[in-house]
Length: 265
Image (tube, rainbow, N blue to C red; front, top):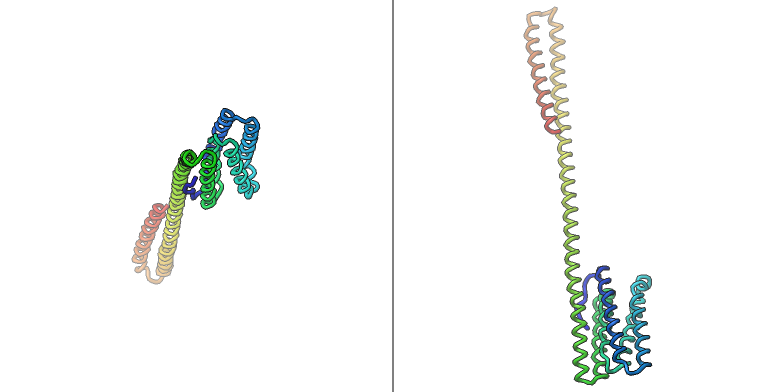
């Protein structure tokens, strides 16, 4: 049963759904074997093979997690079991549906090329065994029917996987965009804080430089006025006016710079 392989690994939830779907298939094949059996020995052999198939199916994932190479051995054994079930009772054809759970596992565990190769071997074995046990016409009819059924189920799983993968990628992209947006907002806040800090530093520097210069001028004029009180008292009033003007200018500059400081905060 050939089918385009998934390009991304399967999700655990999807694997569980495919796993639990395998049990109704096994029950269906078992009931069909029991009702169609005409040979007790053949029925017992078929039931034993079905039991081994079920045991391997239920333990495969746990063992593969510890021993990844086990999956190839597992698939070979399961392939042989299904093939033997097809040859045990030539007139009973439901054994072919046991390939469907194996096909699900292939596309969950194997790379694309390996899964396609195994799927092709499944399809070929179904056709050959059906033709061998029921003849060309019936064999082709039943074989193509089961192959088409397997392709339908696995194709549905594949399409579902594509939708899930696309949704997961969209969610990852959205999460990445949200994270990038948060980082940009944080960077913008930091840039604003840095700009404000630089502005405050510049204002403080201006306050210090301009006021220090004016105070230095006021100090010199005050000392000059004190010396002129004894030597040339007539010049003292002009110096006092100049001191008052400088003091007023210093206060105005201080108010302006302090106002800018508060605005930057």
